[in-house]
Every structure is written in structure tokens, then in C-alpha cells.
Length: 270
Image (cartoon, rainbow, N blue to C red):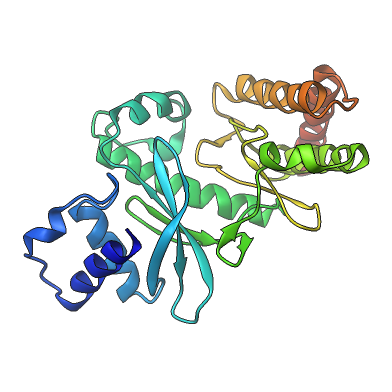
């Protein structure tokens, strides 16, 4: 499959005006003609040199291992532009978000392009606030290029995949780290992740963590931000209490601490 991708992209790179009917093939429902041209554009811009195998696959996107011209490993996230089901699922994160003003929610392709841009900007905003997230590199249309987090072409495990191999003390420390990152997201970046769970926390070999999949994150001014935040807190506490089997703070305690932090930030800035 990676050979097919390389062949498709090389042909696009060599011919500025792509007319070959083969470029209209779809590889794994991802590489339609528009996406191929987008990746070729990133190659011409010297962001990418090549793309190899799949790192992870979901209903709305595939993440591929890519490489920059200088050999740096990169994660290349490609959103499917034909997913009407995905469009329905993201509307609750879009309505009320000023970053989507002017975007026709009935236009699935335009919506996903805006969604990709939103994830890039969320990564930038979180990085600037000191949140441990992948370094954003570039985006174009439905393609987002980020730092690759892994070794020898294999990504680091998600918390859901790693927790059974960890000791109680290690899990307790990871819980503290997750709460610290949650605090940075809310209090420093003034965002709400909106989908925080054991599936969106990556565990590094040194047992540090990285927060991933931030496309749905909304500004705290979003009308649904409080509901999303309460859900994030419930999800994290549920996992560490029921699956990891460690003692956790109550949902109310975590939420109260975050809201107090936000209030202090408002007072400091006024």
C-alpha cells in the first residue's frame, strides 16, 4: 500500500498539471485526487519528502508516517473529505465557535478544511501555553503535518494501551500529569479539549505524557465549553478510578480547581 502512495505522489510531483486518470483512484478512502494534490503541494513546499505506512486509523482520519526532506519523522494526519457522518458529529463543536464564521456547514469539504485548520491552531495555542502536545508543522486543506511521537516508525502507546503494564505508583503519577495538562489547557490556553480520555493521552517511555487529537477543542467562551469540560473531567476520573484502580479526586474538586484558576487569570488580566 505504501508503494502505491509513493507511486501516486511521485507522479503528481513530476507533473504540475495532473491529468492522469490514475490520480483519481482512492487509496484506503483517503487519497482522492484533491488529497493527492494537497500532499504533492506539501512536497513541493519542502514540508514533506515522502509518506509511508499508516500509524493509526479512525472513522474520520488516517495518520501516516511521513518524512521531511532532512529525514525528520513526521505524523501526517489526513481527514476524509467524504465522511458525512463525521460532519454530523462535529457540528456541536462548531456552532458558536467564531473560527467557523463564514464556513458553510452544508459544504462537507469546506467544513473539514476548516476543521483541519482549527486543529493546527489549537496545537499552536496549546504549545504556546506550555501544554504537552505534538509540535504542529504545517497544514493544507485536509492534511495536517505534526511531530511524530514514537520510535523506529512505531508510535508511543496510548494510555488505554499502556496502563495494564504500569505499577500503581506510575499510574498515580500519570493521573497527576493529566490533571496538570488539563489545567494548562483550560487556565493558560483558555481552551477545553472536549474529548479528553484514555484514548487521547499518549505515554512516552519515560512515563511522561502527551495530549493528542485536539481538533475539537473549543475556546472557553464557546456556549458548550462548560459541558465539554465537565465531560472531560468525568472521563478522566472514570478511567483512573474504574480501570486503573487508583484513588482520584472527585469530579467536583477537579472542576472547582480549574474554575478557580480561570477566575485568578481573569483578575490578573484585568
